[in-house]
Image 1 (cartoon, helix red, strand yellow):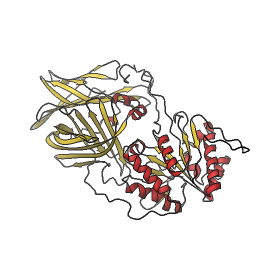
Image 2: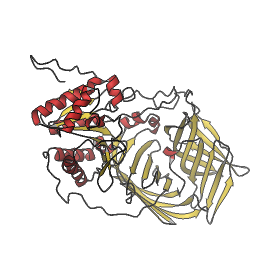
Image 3: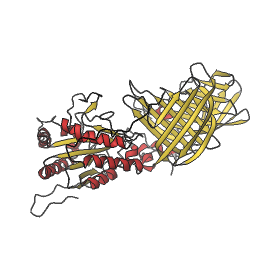
Image 4: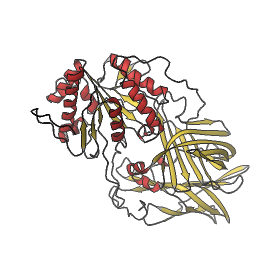
Length: 547
């Protein structure tokens, strides 16, 4: 902690949730979201809570040591209590945080003439990506300020330091766009205090930051770091080396040309999904790629290993998504689909912990997954779900198994995106035979039997749900099939999540592996079960969260 020198002005008090250390160089690192929130109470109603930026304190300390930089780290304050990236929260509830930043900048300017402030944030994106926020977005023809924003760096700093960071990241396989997801342009974003936006403010700290910025003595940026850049592992090591190379090069140094590695475009498909389970290797796959908006694409991959262990990847591309959602690629024709993935994922031993996303992520480790799955059509409905054979392989941290099973294509977006009351089971029963059943809370639904050369579609009423210790955790699904038949699905694994709905309620969604019985035969597949929870509901802890 900082301490006052003998005879000097009394040092600012350092609150117990904060870490303040001076540096010897002109860089100041700030981590505002390094605290933790209380673990979700399964006995209470869900809350709309944001996830703190896990591993940013550890990463900030490592960068500060390598650069000789000063650091100010919130390591204990939950952003849901006080958000230290919101200027209004800081001024009202934690003015000492801004005071420490201003004091550190003043000391740095006195020593070096200018200071660079780097805010270290976390982006819960599974890609090796660092989104650089400076108050604007890169349109491909230059950086344009976001609505009403001011850029927080000078043109020369953008052309040198920011460009050097982008080049250093690209050289090691890390994408570093400017403002793709988080431009840091909102007036209440703390980074905007480091622009010339608040020159008329009554707050002396904001006026001082404006004066330094206007005099060219202060540049500031925020780094929104994807999961692989923060979790311990090789990608984080590469990012640290890239950041040190960029910020240790001295101001005004322009990046070397040709440092960005070439990429090879691959065909891709919009809105493609693949769902399968191989009972021999006990591997399940839920994968989907779709367009969340104009010119954008999102991808999601969920793997089930040994039923309850799960691996999760989510990623998105904001512009020019011609390569899919790296490291995930989908190639699709009318009768075939190939899914390829080679990159880091979060692995969690028990998927039920995802009821509290922050807790689940904190319990997860980073592992490298290599997946190749080739699906070939056997039977399809008209303009809807299709059933086919799957060949491929999957490896986790180098341990590979062969995939040879059957699976479904074009079932819609995988489980985590669902939000309404519903149930679905998709299972295969021997060569060429698959069953799909889906219902919703309104009593409507459908069932499809895939058996070459036909796909027979039947109306379906609500299925019977047998729950375990609470009404949201299913244990068995009984699906009425036709007139006198039933499909019994024993649910062997559970990944539980909570999604907020627009009306203030929530959807509790569980999905995983199902062992099915039909006509005396056994099938295997994946299921999904969603139930709406009112904001005032009480959820029994029962089996919702593992002990």
